[in-house]
Every structure is written in structure tokens, then in C-alpha cells.
Length: 340
Ligand code: CP
Ligand code: NVA
Image 1: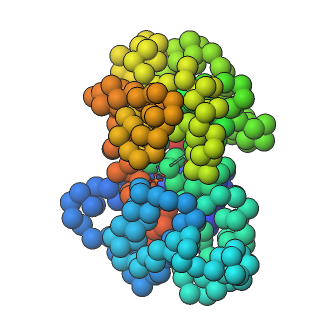
Image 2 (image 1 turned 60 degrees about the horizontal axis):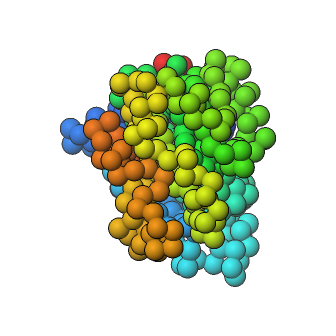
């Protein structure tokens, strides 16, 4: 077996930068196999449980299709389908799932839930987003950067907006692990917690990554290679919209921000879903209440040729496939390579 065998991915820091980059390179290989219709049934006979306490389009679809492509069976267990935390303790549910399945994906609220699932199930658990981290998203994000820029080490990524949410935390730590420079630009009230910054600083000291956490757009944007933003109120924070809009409007990813990078080759990413226009049910409510037409990213930037969020979303499939194949024992994974 490979060195990933039977390991969980609860947060980025569970892996080294080299292991993370190896999974990205393995995902690029799996993407190539899929493009050429070459079968890759590394997980024939395995069963994986997909637990979702929050909604999802990309993560659920990526896990479902990835498992199927690998020859495994995915079973979706939604918030209202199972006893977890309602009629039955987390530990008891985890023990039962661990006796039947080979791996568990969990999306939900507290990080302690995903950690307890791993502890009591005894099988690999993959974090499909918690309030604190979104590690599988990071593999797709840095794979997309690797494809578009040719490397990840030494690039500068600037994240604008709610710099205290799961995606911002994860970008900070992942960039530091991979030797990419990371700027988090947002108001002081929405900057990462001290313990998150400490984890990132420890990795950065090893990798040579530069970290900048600031409320200043000019220094945050200058020289950036990748601009990234995320929703201003995450799942579970729906009561915060008024406060967030007030705090975050200056940090919108618009053409002014793109220009302020002074980089003609800058690219834009967004983990999605995005409020680039408000032609959705929730978007309409926000439009009526606050009189805005676009939130964290303008429609103009979202539709620009340098915006690559749909390539990024598609890469969720290949990267999640890499994680499942590696941790459930595919022996063909390449040897670990240092980030480049
Ligand atoms: N980016 C992401 O995780 O999307 P979903 O919420 O649709 O899974
Ligand atoms: N920060 C967002 C990410 C969605 C993929 C949320 O948690 O809702």
C-alpha cells in the first residue's frame, strides 16, 4: 500500500505539502484517464457513505461520480435521512458506519463532528466542508492553479472578502504548505483566528511562503497572480447578511481589483456558488432588502476570459477521486513529490 492508505483528510494539516502536491499530480493523471475513457476501477467492491448536514452541488456530485468512476458504490445520507446526532450519538453512528462502509465523506458544521466520525468509525473520513475548513476544495483550487500557471510554488494568491471563513482558513494553510504566497484582504473583524494563523506560519517557515493579512486593498492586490473570493455569508450564517454587506462591500472582486494587481496575466477563481448576479431565490431576497445587483464578485469579472471557476469546479471530481483512491489503498499512486 501507499503512504496515504487508511488516512483521513479532516483538515489540510493532516498532510504535508509534498503529500498534498502528490494528490494534485495524481488528480491530473486521473483527469487524463477520464478524458481518454480509460477505466480506473481502483476501488472495485468498496462502499462509501456521503453524509451531508448542509446542502451541496459540487461536493456531492464530485464524490458520487468519483466513487462510481473508481468502481465503488456511493450512498448519500442527507441531514434528514439518518439518526446522527438526533436519535443516536455520533459515536454509535460512526461505529455502525465503520462496520459497513470503507470510507465516509462528511459535510456539516462543527469540526469536532468530522473528527469524532474518524475516531469512532476507524475508517478514512474526508471533510467535505465544515465551519472551519474545506480541504477537498483546496486540492481542486491548487490543481487549477497548477494547470493554468504551470506550477504552484511561488505564485501569489489574493483572497478578498470574508477572510475568517472555512475557505479563507483553508487557502491560508494550503498556500503555506505548498510554498505559494497568500494575501488575505478583508476588514479586521473578518480576519483569520490566531490559531489558524499559527498553523499557517509554521508551514510557511518551512516552505518559504509569504503571508500577508491586511485590510489594505492596494498592498494586498499588487503583484497578485490569482484573485479569489467566496460568499460573504457562509452556510449557517444567513442572519449575518446585513452586517457582512456593510463590512465587505469595499472588498468586492470587481474590475478595479483586477486592475490593481498590475498583472496582465492575472486569473480569477471562486469556489462557487457565487452571487455574481442575483437571479436566484436567495439573490432576489438580498436584492430586495439591500438594493444590490451583485455581491462578492461582479458579473463582469465572473464572465471575463481570465475567470476559471468552472474549470476549478470540474477539478473537484478529479481531486476527490485522487483522495479516495489514495486513502482506500490504490497502490499505483506516484511516489511523493515536492511542490513545484
Ligand atoms: N464549492 C463547493 O463546495 O460547492 P458545493 O457547496 O456546491 O458543494
Ligand atoms: N464559505 C462557503 C463555501 C461554500 C462552498 C460556505 O461555507 O457556505
